[in-house]
Amino acid sequence: MQVQYKIWLEKDHEQVFGEGLKNLLSAIKRLGSIRQAAAEMQMSYRHAWGHLRTAEKRLRMQLIVTKVGGETGGGTELTEEANILLERFERLENTLDPLIKDHFRRIFLD
Image 1 (cartoon, rainbow, N blue to C red):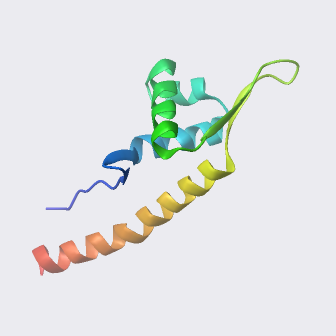
Image 2 (tube, rainbow, N blue to C red; image 1 turned 180 degrees about the vertical axis):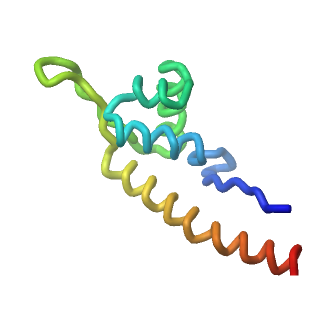
């Protein structure tokens, strides 16, 4: 037996950040493209774009900056605020994971 859990952040009783947005922002950061990130996550560009817009509205902050194509090509970058949010969420996950697993072992397996 093992423990499974999900962590998400809420604001005004609405989910504003969770695993899906974390994965999307991480992929955008790594790939520099919403389209490539969406393809990697097997979701449509439209769904990814909608997910970002909904999150920005609920968080009341801009998460991405898009650059129009040209000689150097277009692309998408995370804002400083999005990078901070992503890093803090990952820190929270990395802090809670061993605690939850340790407590599970002590409560259920000892």
